[in-house]
Each structure stands twice: as structure tokens, then as C-alpha cells.
Length: 311
Image (cartoon, rainbow, N blue to C red; front, side, top):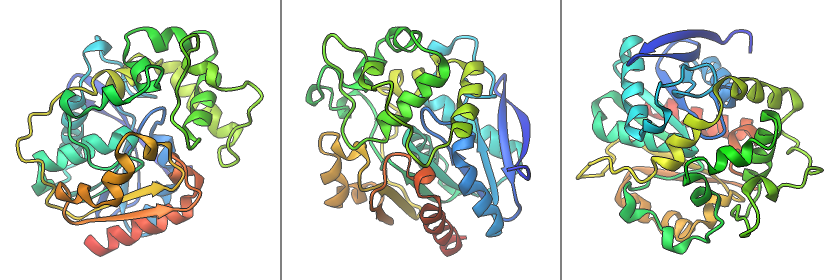
């Protein structure tokens, strides 16, 4: 971990934190929620050891990156534009993108908008998905589904505010490590779904949890909730959503995302290949939504094999 270097980049009026290690072809890691650059620690070191230049930033409003002055106005396209500025600031002409959870969306949309800049895309936990309200299956989801709850401005903040930051991050890690969709009853909030005596998954240590908590104490949850949940309905305005570069999807077999309405069939039937023709899908037995932290060696091997094949 000590060999990972840290710097700040001026990105469209904000100072964004960027971690990097290694030299060679560039691979940029894009985190999800409630993650930060640190969630890619295993992959960054492995990529550097394999001869690649690994970069991971804290998205705007996350971790050590600066907060926008109006977090509620953050949109998904901000993440795409931020990525473009980061690449230009490093003078990077071509890049591999690796996105986890909601990080998959800017990875794919950057590729659609700037295909000449991308060598390949790897996503974990989330496949390529169309955008806009017409493709979000809200009518198929239970009322207490966590995404619907967190789309309500202020509701998650009030729920989280009953606990210290470390407990909130612990609870989300426990919830998202399960194989069932997090759904609250009418008289519950999402944090109530976790029994306080439930232990952390064995693959995340108290030191890891403290690293996450320390950064969320700085950033808070307003911007992190805005991007993946409240800006989810944003239509990116792309008329031909065909990904022209090689791609890989890595899913844990026990990832709760596979329980989203139609998701498992979308992946297993090959429908996703209509949008991503050159796609390879890999399932990791016993893997959960945090598969890159749960089984880092397996994930590292898959990612590095992909990078070597297409570098």
C-alpha cells in the first residue's frame, strides 16, 4: 500500500483525489457505492506488478475529493466529464476502464462517447445498462427497495444520521454482501435491516472499515447518494448504444444484483451482447457484490488476463 502515490487534480473547479501506481499501459478503476479508491487496492497493486499504470480516483464528493458546492445538482455525466479531464491531465491518450457497481455506467458511457480513447472495458457487479426513466423497472420493484428509498432526497441522510459513519458503512457492506435484495418494511428504514450483532464479512477487516469510515466522515453521504441513486434516471442522450471495444463482465454467483427483475436473464441469455457484442462474462462461485475484495486473486487474474490480451 505504501507504494501507491496520491495527488490532487483540478477537475472542472474541484480538486479530485487520485491514487496511482506503476507504469505502462494505463488502466483506470472507477469505484461504486459505498466504495472509494481504496476498494481497488488489491487490483491496483496487481496491475502495477503486471506492467500496467493503475489509476483510481475518489469520485467527486467521495473520500478525499472535494465536494461540489451544490451536491444535489450532481449528474452522472459529471463522472464522465471528470474522467475525461483526469485522462487529459495525465496526457493519457488510450486507457482500459474497470468499473464496479455504479462505476460501470460512466465506464461504458465514456466508451460510447470517446471510443477512440478506450482499449477495453471491464465491469464488476453491473453489466452494460441503458439509461433513462423508461428503462428503470420501478413498477417491478417493492416499495421498500433500497434504491427507491435512497432516491428520496433526505431519507437516507436521516436514516444514516441515527448512527456513526463507521456503523453506516459496516451495515451497507453487510447488506450488499448478501444474496437477497435489500427491502425494508413500511415501518423500517434500510439501516434497520442489519442486526447490530451481525459480523463483518471475513474478507474485510476492522482496519479496512476504519479506512472507509475516516474518508466518509470527511465527505458525508450527500454527493455519494446523489450520483448513483438520485441521478439514476438521467438520460445520457446516446442514440446508438453499441460498445465497439472488447469487454468483460465479472459477477459473483451470489451477487444480489442478479435478483433485480430481469437481470439474470439479461446476462445469461446473451441479450446484453446486443449492446456489447465483444463481451466475455465470468461468474465467480460464492462471490458477492464486493467480489474484488472478497476474492482478489481470482479477480486480479481475470482482469490482468484481459488487459494482456488487449493491450
